[in-house]
Length: 261
Image (cartoon, rainbow, N blue to C red):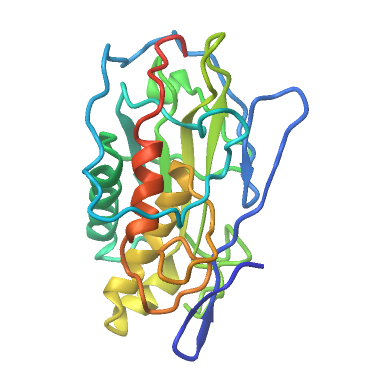
């Protein structure tokens, strides 16, 4: 298991992935996504909505979750990434942590995120990526949830769990000649554990958890460089994206426009 350590408390990120037979899907940390069929091009613009912030330092300390083709799988830069939050078990500072982490990810990638507010949708290992009745004719927005052990046995109620968050994005086939693209995802956070961190004045570390999981959502894998936020163990060296993280995120923000999905 991947571990995330701080001081004397052992904390852990989890990440595992596999392919589904007959479906273009990415499975991470137990989430299985099955693509739906919204009208192609909904919300798409003719050009990228933003650009990554220029890099101050060159670095190769990054790895992509899916780089089987000539370019890594990424979100469409020509449409916004919408997200919703189920607020049950959310710490009081939860919305601020998410907003700050998303701002950092947007800054690094140039991707535009839109907060669609609260939802009553529950997390699911077989969440439908297209939910017309709930979200209309579009890909379902990224779902952010704060969970306890009642929903995920890895998330203990005493705030001392090893597992702080799990995350995944779904990829679907692009038009002929174009790479696959992520269309939605799920980000589950350990509500009690992050609340425990906040109560111990570890706000930067708590926000780092959200940023780390967003890195996975956008397509970054763990790296062996302990100076990067995407290193699987917390070393205290990084509480926000570092040079390698930023270099990888910049590439993920320059994917192919996909009006055909």
